[in-house]
Image 1 (cartoon, helix red, strand yellow):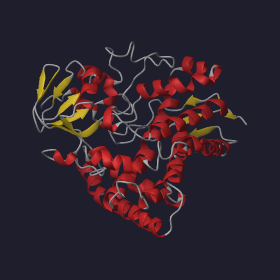
Image 2 (cartoon, rainbow, N blue to C red):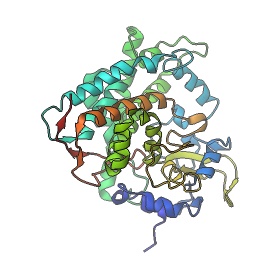
Image 3 (cartoon, helix red, strand yellow):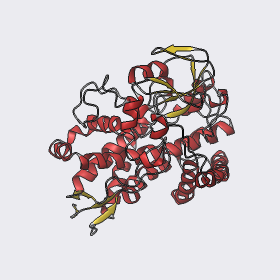
Image 4 (tube, rainbow, N blue to C red):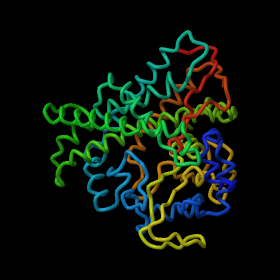
Amino acid sequence: MVEETPWQQALRYENRPNPYPFYEELRKTPVARQPDGSYVVSTYRELVQLLHDPRVSSDQRKLPVPVENPFVGTIITTDPPEHDVDRRRMMRHFGPPECPHMIAGFEPQIRRIFTGLFDGMQGKTRIDLVDEFAFPGPVTVICEVLGVPLEDIPSFHAWIETALDGLDLGPEATTEEQQRRAAAVPAAVTQLRQHLGDLLDQYRERPGPGVLSGMANDDGPEGPLSQEAAIGNAMLMLFAGHETTVNLIAHSVLSLLRHPDQLETLRRRPGLIVPGIEELLRFESSVQFWPTRSALEDIEIAGTTIPAGAPIFVAYGAANRDPKRFENPDKLDLERPNNEHVGYSQGIHYCFGAPLARLEVQIGVSEFIRRAENPRLVEDPPPYRRNQIFRGPKHLWLDIDGVRD
């Protein structure tokens, strides 16, 4: 039996709660060739170098064997100039310079959403933080930002969960159980795309609030997104709103409960939440890695040559715990100085939804700290979702003494 590499071990579902020992082993070879011919970059310096290297493509269509990925043709899986033009078209409706106050303008609404969720927990002594708080908060926010009807959330959630559960890039991908999950993905993605396409068509006929309507009726200097690109990028924003912020809120609470000294620090100094969220994002990266990059030509890095055409995995979760970049990286330190993590990537593919996500997590985690009385973990580690890229708890059961007003 062939021994698995640290990367293959990190991708196994049984190791989802704690992939960090395997990342530590992986970092001993900063650019590690895998048996399938791909290369995993796990150290901070080398990963950042490649994120800014124009010889690295993000377009999965350029891979020798394209990765099954619902985001094909979106801004996260395209290169300049296509990427640059479509990103500008989207940003016109999401942030500066055309919409400089959009994110800040949503702050009162975000507070109302998270406050209302905790109001609904009054009288409870056991809660599932994921199902009752970390999921409905961000999903409601992203739907309102995009202009997706809230009654569509159950359908979108089911399709997205099916798509993510069916994607496995590790040694368990060939099992019969995982093959059954993978077989359900195409239908879920097709239904999701069809529904978003119908929404965009409706907004073209009757413009309304939200980013989708803006994208459907764009009159900017570069013209509108094509229908295909608008559907794909709308789907990307829905996925991100469903997964990354949900996982970050759940992981933030989990990490703070595991580090009661840091939780107590936040209680005493609520203003620390802003830099604190950066540390929580470094500590438990919502996006563990990204699988669609490849080398456009031979790239010499860290004593290794990545040959032209080779797939490259950028392992954010490993780089954010690199001891050569972060002192005592396995320690949660909400006051960590010089905390330039790669939790939202870097370079041209830096997450443009990061300001919204940061605001949501700052408000959500602050509300939890303020209102949950004496929270305790029921199960540690909690059960995890299957997806390896968007890593996060499936449930997070907590016992509490009550909910403060």
